[in-house]
Length: 298
Ligand SMILES: C[S@@+](CC[C@H](N)C(=O)[O-])C[C@H]1O[C@@H](n2cnc3c(N)ncnc32)[C@H](O)[C@@H]1O
Image (cartoon, rainbow, N blue to C red; front, side, top):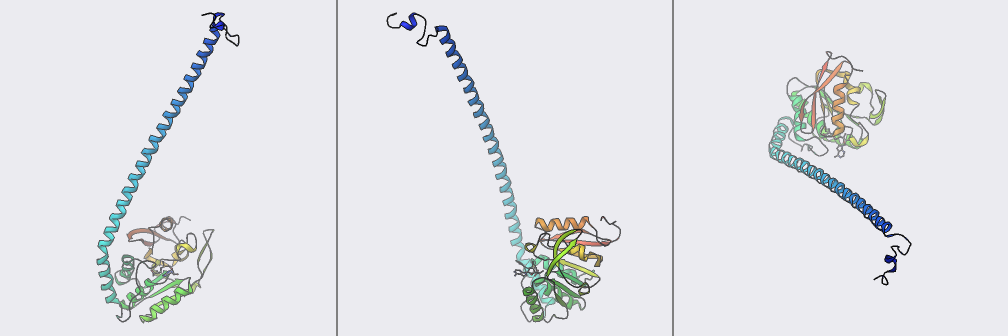
């Protein structure tokens, strides 16, 4: 035996270490290995925790997406169900107010939706009477508002339009309905304006191009793509011309930017006029104007 293993026989390894030293070296190595195994296990536990959390977050997100998509499907279904009655309303009101000879410009897409269009028309046809109408952004609405005013026999719509092509198109549509006396499309190129110290782009026009007393202000332009906060200047610039009880109609408040505009208008009276949202119609918000009673916040 001793001949077979001389190193063991003398108790020394080939490197001269004793058996005790070698055993203790192995113990240290086993201890290190144990620590590494614990580290790997901790890392695995951590990775599993993170995977579980990520899975839970993903499931939550998927549930939220499913809920949102179900809500959208439901809204779409309701809109589709309402469509025939909206078209019926459009046809009925169209027959009531149009001259009945030339096809009317269509609603929706770039133009206002049928419910919004019907609402602004009803503001002219109903009580209180809206006779002095100013509009930001011309098109289908200009023609329908002018037809409504002709139907009631008084009033006028002044429409600011930054794009000469669309200004010409609206004038043509008005002429085709014999409405030249009821509406004026004002060429108003966009230019820098100072609104509460902020440089924005908005319609430029001469002060006397618009009436001093406005009882319906329809804000459907300039398009959001032309400038940031494109519709915001409407109230700061025209607010002091709004009569007590006037209606301020802002389209496209389904978009965050226009929603923010409506909220900012509500917080910031102009020339003693304050506005508050009273109704949501389709993609738009109806606001009511009151003079006095609310102190100026600026
Ligand atoms: C949202 S549109 C609204 C026009 C109008 N209030 C209506 O409902 O018909 C605002 C602006 O877009 C431009 N515009 C009008 N019709 C357009 C069309 N078919 N395509 C692209 N821009 C259009 C015009 O400059 C207009 O002032």
